[in-house]
Amino acid sequence: MSSSSMGGCRIPGCRKTVPAALAMEMLCTDHFLEHASSRATAAWESCHHGMAIEEETLDGLLFEAQSAAQALISAELPLEIGQQEKILEFLLCVADLHEFAAQNPGFSSSVN
Image (cartoon, rainbow, N blue to C red):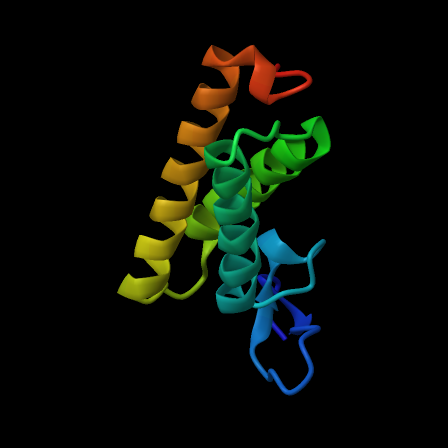
């Protein structure tokens, strides 16, 4: 196993390896992006329904954005175009969500 590969994805039935940048999540790139994108979409849906974004949710998304950026930068093998696009879409979504929370203090309990 190479230094950038951390074993198998924790999703049952998935045989893809976990890149070093996603070792804490123990998810392959595809499952990480699926999970992170779902969380970001849910946060946006909450905003659209007038609900506040919890600080823990925003912090978690920012952490996942850092992990996604690291996965993009440090991939030993080039990521598929679709994976690259999903990472960039996720990063943009989190940046937009963070900006929205910063400009609308009533939608989050704390923004750094």
